[in-house]
Length: 370
Ligand code: 0PR
Image (cartoon, rainbow, N blue to C red; front, side, top):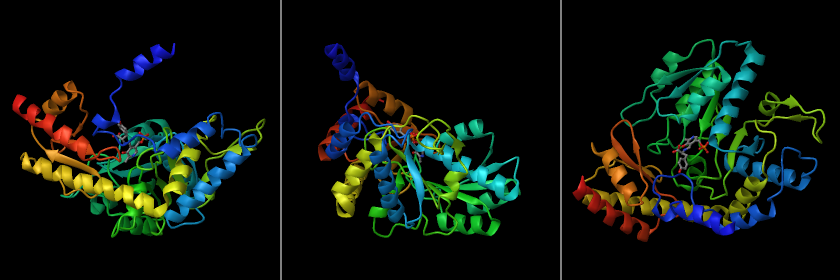
């Protein structure tokens, strides 16, 4: 049986040939922590009271990192669930506070596809605002889409396709002025920006920010699944609660019932083990590798769509799909973006000089072929 399992596993492409993913090989301490918490279920916190306490500790740590020691939240299945819960809380809060019934939210055109699911699941109308020439949301366009039924704005700190950061300060001002919620999707950037010098404010430091998605299973090197949702305070969690009459807890604010403690343990382990300085080194290395990749790509005639801000970079080419397919045939995985036509790479901690040089060598071959 184990042989059979291994055979399937061998068909998977190793991370050392993956330049498209926001996930990575988990840090060794994350794997160790994952093992220790394998059977834990945070869906019933009265049983797993130590794991529950650890989650609170992790929330304080993340909250402080995001400039708010009162932040409240939990570790979930990923950025999709975190975004759902962020918007669901905003909708419920605005229903209670202002009686809004036919809710809408205004999101950037560059938002992750999870917001499409949100519209469908929550029955909230999704309004998409256009971008400026740097692929940041146009705040004027956002303002035009806001009306009395708008419950939340969304800003992205690290867009999926380009790693761009929206003008979050301006979005925050607008949210405060209009008395609406502001959800920040920092699924990727949330564990990059705090470790960069000169990063713009994107978190609870800004008065308008009500919730933040921040995923340890991306740049936090935790084991999958480990997404994160943090709210400005506990009142948002209460707006999500349902009663759980027969459990050790009286109510539940999470989306899923049964919920692994492995993400909590592995995320905590990495942050605790590496500390601020260790995380900063990881981010610095990813940015150095991004710079190296850009240099190599420029020498092959490719230009980045925008100068990389984080460790996500896209290069313009009309042959994007073809290049991606030819690379895949050679067991290298990259991705493409829609507008403008470009190939996209994410330079995660598993990407080192050797990976880049192997990739560039294959890309040379592919360019000749296409
Ligand atoms: N928000 C942003 C900004 C994201 O980039 C993503 C995922 C999400 C939310 C949703 O997160 P979950 O996938 O955890 O629910 N971004 C990556 C993407 O769609 C996810 C990914 C990861 C894709 C690994 C492929 C892969 O191999 O590109």
